[in-house]
Figure 1 (cartoon, rainbow, N blue to C red):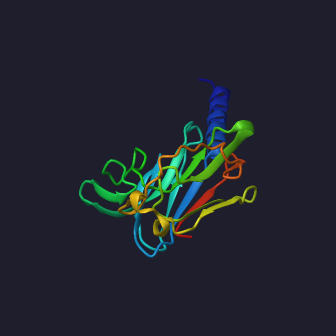
Figure 2: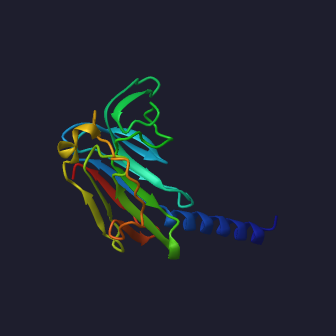
Figure 3: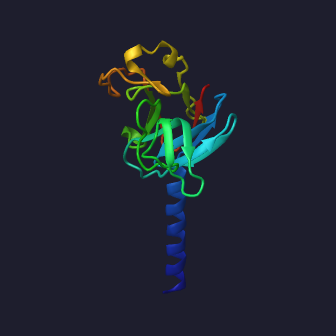
Length: 197
């Protein structure tokens, strides 16, 4: 390989790495609840968060599905192998989630595959409610905020009550049923999710 070809390939790989990292979003997940939650992300894994602690989730800009971040409550995990169970939001009995959480769970959802290089984000209670949540863009180019702060658990009808939360009333909802509930930011925006804002 000639030196000029080597320089070209090095410059190309640097550009590809730079282009990829510029589109990646960082999610800071913070627990403001007065109790411990086990934050979960699909994709991204999971982590125990005591009151006031944060966790940073880095994302793949090429991820082409809907990502979800949520809180799990009243969990017990085996420290040696990371298996256990959560009262709400459980993801198949493991600390490091590779699947979505079991209802009831309040979801922060996002997608990077928007039109015109936009990312979309929302808060969903379609799968029930377990913890109040705030989801916001933190970049200077996008600082939109979505909040679900009410105590839905306290108002939950008896037939929908579940340990750790309030189940959904078997009603279907989708992102276009209320244009005020789905927000968009340019790709590369960073976000913050706060439990119990």
